Length: 158
Image (cartoon, rainbow, N blue to C red; front, top):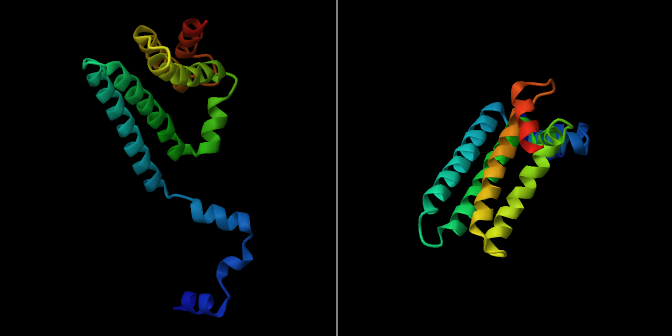
């Protein structure tokens, strides 16, 4: 009831906070909401990738495969934004240890669709999808210190 009185009288408690603090407070998600949306996005990404793989065997299924597989990878990649936030996600993706894998992955996302829709090269589209998978695996598995996964990824991409 006090809050209603303050709002109606124009003495809202958020007046003390600056505009930036108000925006951040309004856009902050709770931990459980972040985890729920992470699971939803990640599961949707996996579902799209599996659906795309199943559609591969239909006539002209390569186009559907490329689209669904690419959408699935974008959804799976976007899902981690819910856990750490989009800015931190981008900062981590473009760290020195992940830079090559990130660029290869983003390039392959675009080139997969180009290979299917503009160049009409089915084999090339499948190669780009495989490279998407490898680059995403390398980008997600690398840590600051040299690990066996990072070493394998650097050998793979060299």
